[in-house]
Structure formats: structure tokens, C-alpha cells
Image (cartoon, rainbow, N blue to C red; front, side, top):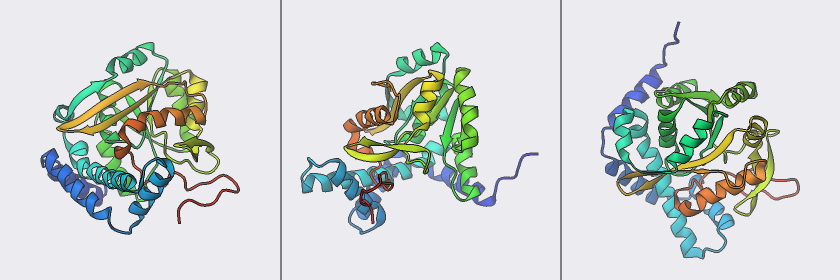
Length: 291
């Protein structure tokens, strides 16, 4: 017997459907307004964004760094404000917002090989939209970290799993299932720049700073010989542009993983989620980066 969805989840999904009826330009405009406001407030997201940009983009002068921080926070809030539309619209209507795709043939060739595909999707642009796009092309297992509140997880699974996406909790017990899925030609979507738990990663540089990086993705790639792709869905006027590329260099360890993530992010620095505490775990002997 199916478990009844908590009332908080039902209410949230209803609200998402109502907000999703608003034009994309309105949602983005509201996000820009909110992002501009928080960019001048002394809150956690603003402090972390500025600190990350200062460390990772040392060639920028003070004005350039402040401009990038403001734009990044605007894009962060646009991502939040776009979620009602991305999570509630039927995919055929949502697909009209995808006004450009590069690398679709790369995806099709990888799927045709039948040896398993890992799609790495960094915290860049509208990654939630990208998951839905990929799930229209193939059955997609989406690895995620479970939120603390069960009803929030119900909302996430309902929104992400309405196509051929299969939400999979990022737990040690899931690794065997992921191996079998890839070995049988399945497809896995994963956030490669999410800081793992202690014991589940190694340090490797990204943007010149050592970051505790997941070992799961390179281990799965090496053990299954799966094709590794990197993809994003970036925000452009009138909608979104999806970009898909093969890993170069091949992902064999955390260092090559981070090289690929950085290459994907560099052209779209303003749309990267700099407010994430990517460097909160430090190698022995190194000082803390965030207060």
C-alpha cells in the first residue's frame, strides 16, 4: 500500500503549481531583485560567496569581484524562483524553454554504446531542468542527499521523479545498486562538486584550492568502464541552453574530476553556486576558510 503524502508536501506542490503559472521573465525578475538585496546584506550566503570568489578568482580586482558576487547571488535566487515552473510544468511545455542544445549527439552516442553512462552535473545554472531533460532521453537514476525533513524529500521525489528519473539516496547501501545499474548499461546523474562526508572523499584542487572531493564518481567510472559526460543548463535570454560534453581528460581520480568541473564552470562563472561551502573541510594543518 502506498504511503500517503504528508500534508506539508501536498501544500507545497500545490503552491509550486500555482507559482509555475507565472511567466519565466517574472520569476527571473523577482530572483534578480532578491539577489540584489541579499548581496548587500551581511548574511551567510553573501559572506560565503564573497570569500569563495576572493579565493578562486584572485585575478579579479575588488570591483570585478563584487560584481561577480552580486551576479552570482542574483542567479542563485533566479534558480530558486524558477523551481516552481521547472518542478510543476509538464515536460512538453517545459521543453519550450530550452532554446538551445549543444552536445545532444554526444549523449546519444554514449547511450548507444550500452555500457553505462555517468552524467556529472555541477551546481551551475538550472541543474534541476537538466535532470528532467536527460530523463526524457533515458531512464535516469539521480543520486541525491536526503534532506532532514521527510516531507521535503516527498516534494523532491515527486518533482524529480515525474518523468523517467529515479531518485536514489546517496547512502553506502546504494553503491552496489549503482554498480549493477551501470554495468547493465544504465545511466546515473550525479552532482560532482558536492562535498562528501568524511571517509567518502579525497582532497584535490579546484580553482586552485584543495577541496574534499567525492571518490564515488571516479570509482564507479573505473570499475564499470562507464562513459562520463559533463553537462549543464545555463540561463540565457528567453530560456535555457543545455551543454553536454565528454570528459576530457578521462575521469580516473578526484583530480581529473575537478579538472573537468572547472572547465565546465569557467565560461559561466556568474551562474555557479559560489554560496556553497565547498571548502569547509580542510587538509590537516590548513586553517579554516569560513567562520
